[in-house]
Image 1 (cartoon, helix red, strand yellow):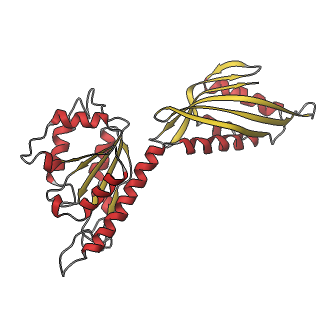
Image 2 (cartoon, helix red, strand yellow):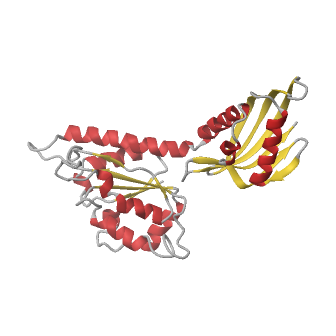
Image 3 (cartoon, one colour):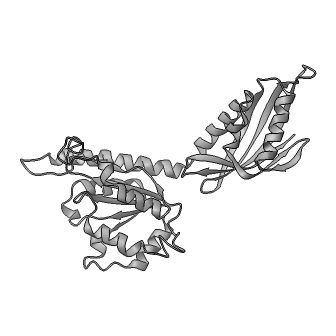
Length: 312
């Protein structure tokens, strides 16, 4: 995890300083690079910053809101570091697939960022350029986290305690987002498997299943051998619907989900399968073992099954 922090006067900051302190307490492995401290002369070590980006899987821009944008040092960072051949253009795919989050502190109230407020626009409307930057560099864009009333002016605006409370709440939201990422998608995968068999039991339309299958999906079924692709699956599924009465019954047992690489899962489990054959009207039960290879696409937040093996 990499935090690019931009604040021209961090020592006198309340909100950003508190947020960074909270993140540092929670995560030992987090790297925080305060640009204004690293480069007081505004001469950015481009190779060094690019090297830091290469090792990060989660990138956070932490900064106050300056004239509806970023502090000047962060803008310079974008200009100098996100170069063609690295972040954009031909060969510029080094940030592809990395998580991106913009974390921003604002002075104004929530009401001020409305059509009738003195800022006239919602916060996220001002953040469209950064959203497009994430898309252009092929990063995975997370909705920004921002908080209001983070400025303290003695006897005029807010209080130190209020700003700190806001900052702690803000930091907790960032921490939750990071922890969701670190915990991965195992729980989502498990939920999907159970949902898959719920739809299988009702012999749902084949379109439900096709949407989750890789175009080159490889299936192995007892009595059918190995088949590949969507059309083969459709033929197999049609034969199942012709053979069995609905509903079917699949009972998933001993589910094991292992993440071999980020969002690439090896899955194995047993299924108790019960059904009534249309022709004989006899009910039967078999126990099967299943092995899946599945990829969780974080861009679409949907699973893709790449390999599906069933054995008796």
